[in-house]
Image 1 (tube, one colour):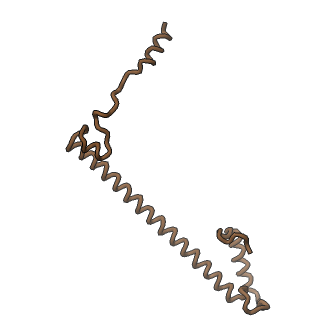
Image 2 (spheres, rainbow, N blue to C red):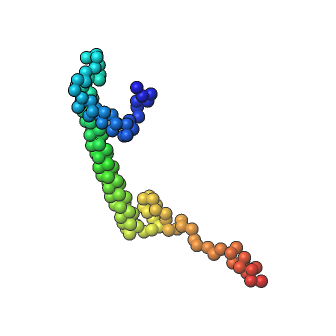
Image 3 (cartoon, rainbow, N blue to C red):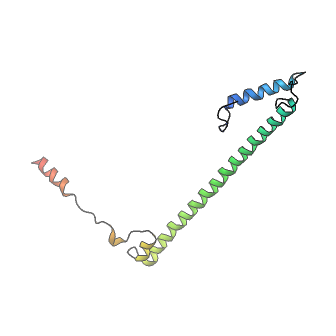
Length: 130
C-alpha cells in the first residue's frame, strides 16, 4: 500500500497496473486462495471499471470547469467594455471636470497634474556646455 493515497497515481504506474490486469484476465486458472479477497477477477474488473468511470467523470468536470470559466471571462469583459462606454457617456453628458465623472472613477480635469518643465535637466545641460 502507498503511504499517501490522497495524490493521484503516476500515469506510468497506472498503465502498468492496467497492463497487468489485462494479463491476469487472459490467465486460465487465476483464482486467489481466499474467495473474499479483493484480488478476485470479478472484483478487479469492478475496481477497474470504477477507476475508468471516475477518470471519465473527472475529464467531464474539467471540461465543464473550462466552459464555465470561459463564460465567466466573457461576461467580465462584456461588463468592462460596457462600463468604458458608460464612462465616456458620463464625460459627454456632464463634462470631464464634473462630480459625475469623478463618481464613476475618472479623474477630474482640474485635478490632473499640470505638465512642468524639468529645470534640473536644463541646468545640467547648461553646465555641460560651459
